Length: 361
Ligand code: PEP
Ligand code: MN
Image (cartoon, rainbow, N blue to C red; front, top):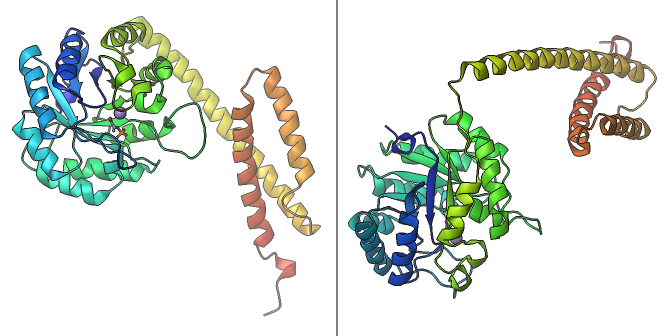
């Protein structure tokens, strides 16, 4: 039984990026324990910093503060583990769940070592996506934890590193967590909008999007005084702001028991099914014409790719898309995909040995 699926409620995890002092932990924990939706109090004990010299966490000392907060405010605690010794200390200080950070998921050696330390502990584990968008590493880390016998597993989507300047600190690439969901339908996926956003003003839009697409919870960095935080200060919010944010977000369930809703949904889905069928027939017809064109081009020794024709297609379809109020970028991608397949088919025809060009054997 996976305890993350226990209540059919979004799994909300909140707390500071780092545990910085006993006072900070106790004050934050007190205020967070008063927010009814929050299930786990998080705090970083050992901080993976990109360069040496930055604040790297207080280690075992900070675990004593967390244990005190747990006892005093009756909250469940959750920390990052990146090494077998972290797991040992997490158990010693009665931590309720541990997560594997993005940098660790990237490294199968480290995940293996942590998995060995977790063996026969039964502690719930959350696994963040790797730094770069390679879903197999994420799947592999989940499988390594599953192999220890641990049943309570969740994934955390915290976005992906990319080179260059964009709006968010880490790119969300939502199709990756959705693909993970198709592979592990029983493993809840929690969104970490804090590390995706990098700035607190984007938290709402990312968190709402995650809820809209059916992710199962949120991990939000919350600090008693973000302006003096020792790490990630731009993305942290106060417990009061957290309470407000959680009240602003609309949480959706994946199903509804209302028969009217189910009935209407079924009718609309049937229409979609029919449209998709029509679309596939039309695509097949389009590609059939492409094959005819390819044979014709071969006969006349004309190349598969014709720049002016491609430009024409793009322009005229984009004009129509505008009239139909379809997003230009979406239509561009769709046409590029069709064009790529068309070039592949023509290439096959041009490469094939036609009967009259065969050499006598
Ligand atoms: C964190 O949650 O504090 C953290 C270090 O996150 P990530 O592994 O996603 O960078
Ligand atoms: Mn952080």
